[in-house]
Image (tube, rainbow, N blue to C red; front, side):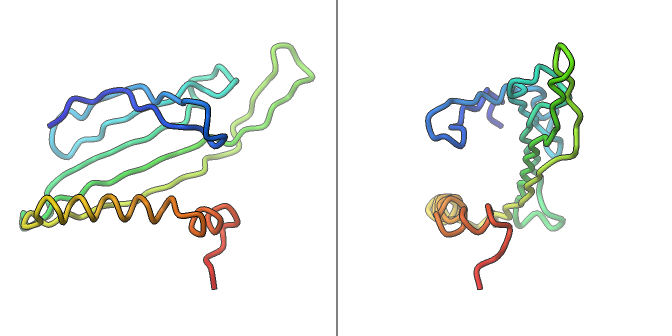
Length: 136
């Protein structure tokens, strides 16, 4: 297993780096690793966006499953007080899983990951996600 390290990604503006620092490495196979970003201009740790990953074998050991989760806090800001007060309204969430057969070649795995990630980042898919409607 690889050692968990900080993850740096681009913010929505395509320029700003956002660092998701390791909060917890996986304690072993089947347990979660968690990364958290600094609260965006809020300063409250409970309003920190986070990313999680957990991997484990399937029941008959023919494949391994990796579960991914991302959560973004949605909050309101009351600027009438000093310092401003923030109220958590809820979370925007993503979750997904990869199931990779143990019989997969390196090429199979590389294409599965690359093409699925690129598809999720395709402009048509991104536009649909932003509107929250599937293309018809």
